[in-house]
Picture 1 (tube, rainbow, N blue to C red):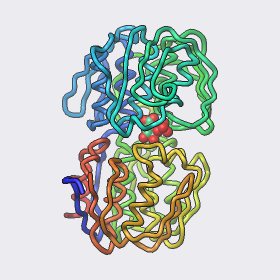
Picture 2 (cartoon, rainbow, N blue to C red; picture 1 turned 90 degrees about the vertical axis):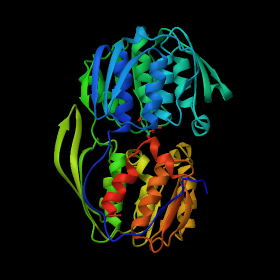
Picture 3 (cartoon, rainbow, N blue to C red; picture 1 turned 60 degrees about the vertical axis):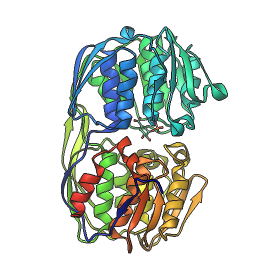
Picture 4 (cartoon, rainbow, N blue to C red; picture 1 turned 120 degrees about the vertical axis):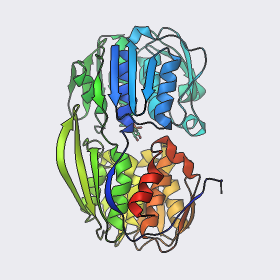
Length: 431
Ligand code: S3P
């Protein structure tokens, strides 16, 4: 096992009050839209983690002035025409969101760019982004007809299209909206199932006229956002690990404050409710156009469930590995279907979660588009994060009520989305 193996001992309970770092999806968008606005934007409670630093690095290489102090970013945007050709290859690191939105942005620029990423990102499909960009008039090339990074881009003034996305993806939807900002005509984007709408909410708040319905976004091209002042809500996907840990560790009681509860993100709450968990949303409010609340969770006996409704799958997509872990503590079998997208995340998350659970003594099986997990508890043992931040944290949660300790290899990868995870997790576990 690599040197950053971390051992987690079982605990009695998780308790206390927790605030989680800023939302990753919203942090990427806030930086990118501020860079495209003309003027000074100020973002508070920005997530400071490897993925966000990938976006910061790419924008700086394109000439954007971004000042970071603590969790505050001050961005001096020069407008969409104010970017300059980078001296070197842009690197999106592990971040699919950076790569896909930047492909949209670079396609609007009349200069040459090459964008790449780490080994995981170079294996993830980009065709879902490059096919519509080519249809809009961008010039792009890369391996397998621009399906894999590195991808070379020569952009310019594009034309708006009416695009029906074959796969629901908020990253692609956002990349296309960005591409429309230096295009002619009208842009219409329709998803099979609507995804998280952070982009739409943020752009509406910054003066962009967008028509939105469940699955469709339409806008007149060439609209640009105004500079913004915003506070990023806590990341539901980070809060999810504490929600999950509190549900399964006996005698737990936890309050997580200031969490974003955008309906495109909170499918896990619907799944947990269906499994019998005690999760309460309190103090619901709006902050800069996003719904935010505190979440109160108590230990609960779960029962197995079958989830195949695409809307729930899409809005729980990043939490499905964690749901697999929680299912190991339920009574009966949990089945997840229609979740084939998990195979093209930071790792093949269907394989990673089933192999890991099996190594921890749980009966689980891969399905082409999901998995099943038989409840009954977690024995303990050694697993790998598979280089995937969410797999690492999901298995850390598996330890709170396991029989023996859980050792997780390559745990440092949590810095991708949640560098503070260990500190907060130890505090609520009382270790
Ligand atoms: C994200 C969208 C989702 C999600 C990812 C972040 C975003 O990916 O899994 O973690 O910020 O838009 P897809 O757009 O590929 O579904």
